[in-house]
Amino acid sequence: MYVKARVAHRWLVLAVLFVAAAAMRIVVRMAFGEQYFWKNSYLIYYSLAENVISGKGFCIGTKCAWLPPLYPLFLAVSAAADQSYLLVIVPQALMGAGTALCAFLIGRHIFSARVGILACGMTAFYPYYVVHDTALQETGMVTFLTALSIWLLLRASKLNRNRDWFLAGLALGSTALTRVSVAPVIAIGLLWCAIWGPGGKLAERLRNCLFLFLAVILVVGPWLARTYHVIGAPVLNSQTGVALWTGNNPDTFSHYPMGSIDRSRDEAWLKMTPADREELERLADNEIATSNWFARRALTYVRQNPWGVVQGMARKLEAGFSWRLNPYREPLAQAAYSIAYVPVVVIGFIGMAIAWRRREIILIGMLFLGFIGISAVFWAHTSHRSYLDVYLIVCAASVVETVLLNFDRPKGVDHAGNSRN
Image 1 (cartoon, one colour):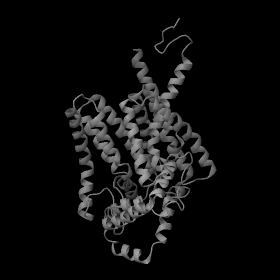
Image 2 (cartoon, one colour):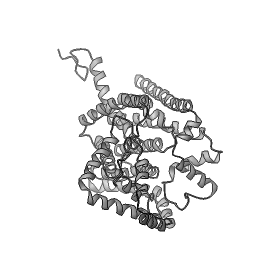
Image 3 (tube, one colour):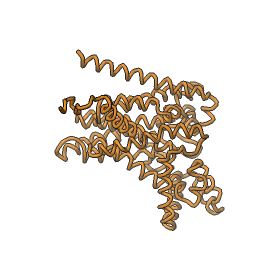
Image 4 (cartoon, one colour):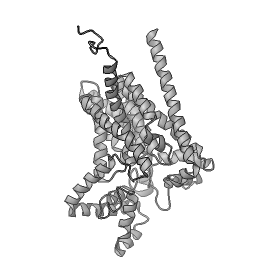
């Protein structure tokens, strides 16, 4: 009876945290106002959603694979309802609250229910998430889907049932269709399953990987088939070459990281020669050829400036993990972000270091390595790294819970509650 009451109390606390997390995100966004929402947003996503509704498909001008489809499809509901503001912020607030719930599930699986509750509360009121989960950008969605994928992977590794591995694969595929730079999480999931998954036999782990992979293909396959049919290559998007060039050219750091990387890209664009512009104009209707053109330019720059590229990698990683927001914001926003982020990153990495031998922590460590690799090659702003903060919060919660237990335990009593006297 006592156990049932404690479990019921736990779920009541979680329900309160879920509602509070969603409500806070909605209230904060409405406090900023609808005009601010539309003005400070990535409107290209909404333009794509409007094109989907109007029958133009996933095309903007001649670009038909510029962005992955999941977030524009989500926005299409709002676009169909005459640009409804609430149909964007309310569902995204629920996703943000879902991320907090995933923090509980991940924390409970790796450590304990108490850690999970702490992680849920910390995620629910994490300032960066509270503000950005309802912005017109895919950050909140990708944070939620990645956290859901990680929990489903951990759950599948515990239960070791085919359907659970399949569910994890569906979530992984959805993550890749939301933000392409997070697509390596698919390879990370497959690798972790093959090496650190349950079962003593390699054949069993490979079977689990097969179910993961089949689910990923089920989600991602139709989009790859579509891009192959439309632009001639099975890609998640056609920006890879442009992104590589943006992060590897003489003007990459002309504005970035203090300003947006887009300003640095525009600076580099203005310095192109007439011959370059003419060639790009000729390739304008071919997305893959254009991407390849930019990729070749980026690789040429890398070969000609190896030491500068290495230094640039360090600056990109510094920007990604910086204690300051980038692009830089007003002092109040900077202070709020730093006060929340610095303790989380410091204590979180301590928690990861303490538990580094656990295979669940290995999976989280692989996520960080994947982000580091992508960021060093391309670039990173704060928003690109923020989907990882939930795992730092979980690990930080494990340290906090240990400290609280030590304070609560009477002197002369060990961890099991036995007297040492």
